[in-house]
Length: 381
Image (cartoon, rainbow, N blue to C red; front, side, top):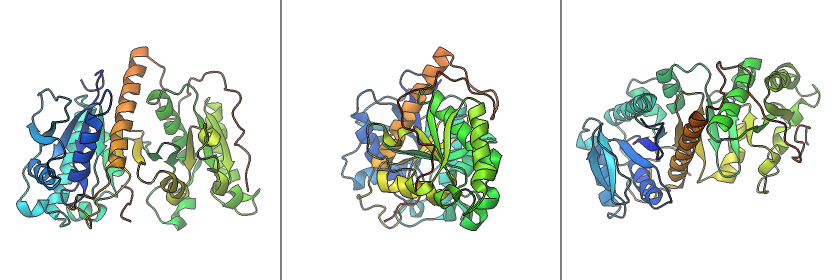
């Protein structure tokens, strides 16, 4: 149903009702509705929380209107369809006052959205912020959205990717202490990241032969073993395996100069990058794309994006939250949904297993060689 639409239906989970989720969803929906050829949006959450947020915003947003499964969701800048999942007590929708009830509800919104998307009732899922601590207090022991969604979808190889206008970065490891990263860097982990990134760029963004840059782990990418052997022992062999599968992967490159091509007509000379750990990739991305970065979970059987910020309890309810990242998340989800639908119509070949060979086109020419080594309130979810 959702995946075959000319106009994608985007399901948005409202996030923690005490955070800025209701506000940024309303603001983003207002912006999206005025864009050319906008997607259709349905918000999964608490109708009272969304209505209260709309009142605080002085009505300068679409009017929340209850929606039920099977109803036609209309594109409109006047109303916003809300799939009311349960009813929260008044104290659970007070901005800046997180509760176990609210965190449990946020969990249920995500679960319902994932199920709708996997059933084809929605084209993609966009998740507003939840809080890791309160999610666990509510008895749902997941580090964040990605781990929860991977569990629901029984996804074996999944990765977090962050994207903006200039940069796309997929992470081999995510939420772990830096001392643990070397043990987690295996050939399969690096290769799996390259493969799911390549599949995403091909099947959802329509790139015939995406060029992927792979960062090293150590300073200067190890300096030929002087500063560590992960490049020679793990990362380099994974890149060669990816190349053997027909993937246009390059590296390992020195992490400190990997992103120096920012802002040019062909940013960095590549389409996506693979970073070995969280801060290695996200410091650069957040400097370049702070208010417009999008979190994408790769390797799921459906499209999932999220704004690259947290619940921001300290400013919730004040009407000052920036909705730019939520706007970008919805637009990225809609673009990916249209790309996936187009790929299905043209029956583009897709890998049958997580490490299967990828069909490629002739290698591009005229692109720079990047394979040589060169010397407030936001927190990702």
